[in-house]
Amino acid sequence: MTTVLSGPEKKLGIKGNFTTADQLVLDPDLIASVPEPHRFYTAMDCYIHNIEAGHGHRKTIMGDSLGTESLRLCREIFLCEDSHTPENDEKLMVASYLGGLSLTYSEVGACHAISYGLATVLGIHHGIGNCVVFNQLEEFYPEGVKEFKAMMKNNNIVLPTGVTANCTKEEIEKMIDVTLTLVFMWAHVSGPDWQKTITREKLRGLLLKM
Image (tube, rainbow, N blue to C red; front, side):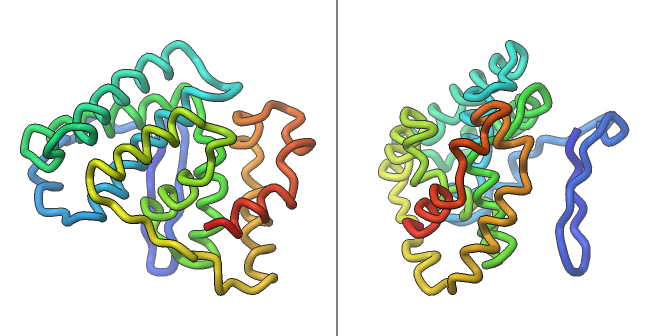
């Protein structure tokens, strides 16, 4: 249901019944030449989709079923001896598709909400930003973060550090402002009273760790 529009100045999304495609192409040859670590960062967006969809107040049986199968494929790919094979590229295309469908019946969560702030202020690519953020979210997704770190180790991935180290106070506050506008994501994470626990202080502390 989600369509991404890339324009000359910004990227925007549209989500609704009229954006659903009649057909789609899942071609593993299109990702065969993507170099590391970019392949890993982008693929982890799929992994994080599944973790967030399966942990929250909008979790559903349909979304959880699709996400569970997508997670199984992600584990086969990124916890094996060699993740970058033609067979794994094929699995990754299917995992990505199923992960996207899982969100149709659920919602993304804390990682995406915070990473949008990073992207808006610092222009960080979505996949890298999600990985940088997810790495600090043990409080929300302890098992998912543990497995994510195992996948990084298995694939010799070293995340960027000090991403927010040189940010001004105003930049940090703007990131928080952006993050807090995503009320539907936080309601999925913490319920209708999410503002009682998802405070500016908590978000500031998380951002400064990145």
